[in-house]
Length: 283
Image (cartoon, rainbow, N blue to C red; front, side, top):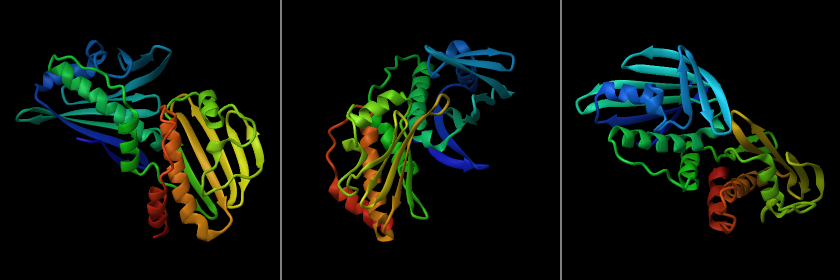
């Protein structure tokens, strides 16, 4: 079952359900004991009373137990996020309801894809069978991004704006991909519907701004050690009638740029999809 994205008290929340054909006691051990968590959880977990620590090969972060009601509910904070595991009785074993309160909505696509893999690894551990980590992440992330509407642009006055997740890519790598190491305006900064013009500002590896006959375009790249890397694109459109086309063009442009960060640099420009999106944004 795919993840759902909801908003609770103004915060984005991912929700997963899994029917596990094992006793609640066995599942409880798998979701609460560090020796079991290491087989499927994305970080190495240490628990000392209410204090928690999550370790990766090159970083670590802290958390705390928020709720512990064996064998029913285990909830904890991980950085600014809150994770909650609830086990509900079921005739065939137990129903796991897992929710993840996110610190930033833009990360929901990659986080949902990641948890799908982790929960599959949990099921394999419970069944005592091997699990092979997937190597293809782009497709699952793209599907969730579309499903959750995280690829949609918005309009604020004359500004067309997009914010897209770039996962954890270092800014220097993103900038190199974006510019190709070339001086001046890189080809990836413009597209067939937004022709290039003079560069008005550049601050590697975070900012590029240029004028186009359609209006000023601003690319901003940011990295947060807890939330990952993002790109925010703002296009101040000169002609209001051009807004649906600008939204469609940048929608597709950013899809292609996201794919390029995963090595897919040869996707052709999909004119039919731009036309379809232009109609949708204009309706």
